[in-house]
Image (cartoon, rainbow, N blue to C red; front, side, top):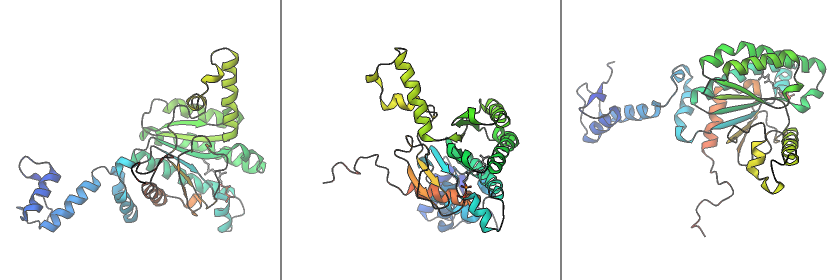
Length: 309
Ligand code: FPP
């Protein structure tokens, strides 16, 4: 089958040239019918912003990508990665750690896909303050996985221009994880593409307490008066001070809770809960969440049309 080269009409951009021919009902010189020309036009427009990697995505992933409006993608997506233990149990695996290991591949795919789509920030809830209370073997396994991940992903982060940062109580982490984290953060500090923000030993109440303590210290030093404490001042003292608030919060495994995650920052986030367990949450599920997000009407506490009665 011949390739249609209709996009070269005199003095018009490729899409305009195709439209022009289609409107006139002309066959192009290489024999494209108006219908084919319109189909090609739509394809050209839909694909113009697509990441190069989408060529290798499945048909259903490309169909979801085609539903997205690139001008309305969330700047910041935050994810509560839940269901690793259930995933392992469902497969008859005795160790929950197998679920966490499988979850690493979802971490990798979500990170790469968000970077390819041009999102600014992806925050992943990798280990909560409360997770320290899990059996010590599971805690050690998670810390080992984290250290290995932070070393193994360095090339991938550099290739994709991704900056790594963290939120949470860094000092709680064991030495090996802290070292791997510091080195990877230093290596990627100059990257100006997406920020991968790992929540590690993170709890929103702990973050708010630490922020409040720092504000109180500033007041004590006479650098700040109590009446100067505004929501902006509080936000500037949070671990996320340099990041936009999440637009979309995703939770896997179907639980309807926010689990002490970014309590301040998710004030106006859209929430997408899926029953899919984290190790099964891959590119297709992520794209579905983005499509769902774009179907929401964000009002930030106002009404849609101020002229409506
Ligand atoms: C919740 O599943 C998941 C976690 C507590 C940890 C998430 C960790 C990973 C995905 C792997 C490590 C991450 C990085 C970034 C290296 P759960 O164990 O609570 O599952 P359950 O509710 O089914 O028991």
